[in-house]
Image (cartoon, rainbow, N blue to C red; front, side):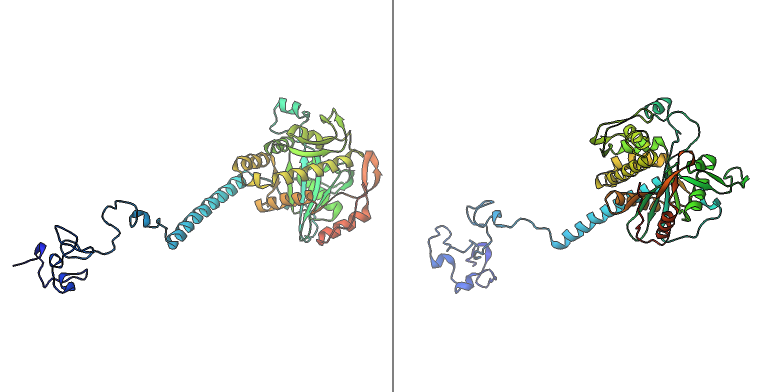
Length: 404
């Protein structure tokens, strides 16, 4: 007859403990304080010994040996690394897609309208890259009210309001203003649209070249009088200039003295102030008050402002913020006219070089002037100009200075 509860017999053995582990004596026979079942502590009623399971009598979800003794779940290191890589790859893909999209959007808006290949008798290419940056008085796209607000007048056609050569090479960039009243020689040329050949050489002001045949003749005239090859051309009109300034929230300038000029609309008090698009345009166009030698003083103001504009635009708060980046780029690209070979990379290089000039990492100057010339124009200092252009062509440090 089986004497063990649950049908266990003397031959039953288990690794958890059995009657045989205690000499084959049933718990009841050994006695003990566990009345009713005759069970010693550490034994189940079926003969199994207790093992440290963490679940003792009276313990329910907590306390000694309960759930609270288990450490919180910790994600395996390998899984964390996989998750981190997934997030990182996703961010890179999004950033790459955004960059590519921005590139194609900007590239499609760039107006490549100037063909420099038709320019005649060009100088040899030097080291570095030379940009001819032109501010025109184009009123294209401006309403009658905008022309009135911006004090642009309503003259037909376009003229150059400012001209600068920017040299970018292995060293610090150099920005040189060309006064529009410079007395220069316009060489014979072929009309860019008519194809008609003009064989006469003219002695006149520099801005006359642009008014006669636009960008190609202006480039030819600059190259003819400097011996420096122009690699790229960039031109922006009144409207685009004002929109760029407004899109970045204005540009901070330190006005050196009170300025009031009814022709340009300039009306400023001395000191630091933030100029909006309308004010900025009046500041760079002013040539009748607070500019010293009129055209020369005005070119200095233009350099200061354009460099400040580049410096305040090329900031992380603008470049990394789509809500500021796209309006700013859109405002500039809508009216910016460049040569057919200008890439966005070239445009970016030009822009950041101007930022460097503003930050003191480059040189800015006027074309060296020796004195007055006919018709209220300005005569270049030929010896200094020749040395300056040779230094630029060889991509050397510029040591030439302008006294005005």
